[in-house]
Image (cartoon, rainbow, N blue to C red; front, side, top):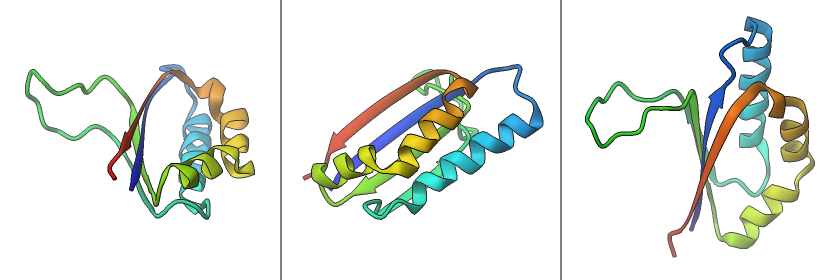
Length: 100
């Protein structure tokens, strides 16, 4: 199993329409064929010193293996998300885990 975690910090000046555009784009990533499962959400309410809550939305996707992840990266839906929504965040942090 391969886990791809992406943490977006949205620009603070987004309009409601831009925010909705981001959410629709991020949710579209869940429809890519090589994605086994995924979740999109805001930081949880947990508040301990070791927890990093400095992001707007987290997206966690699972794939069968790294090859499936690579197919996701090349998918037109993923390209459309980056192109259409890339200007909506001020920072993005990505963590990949090979859980084999």
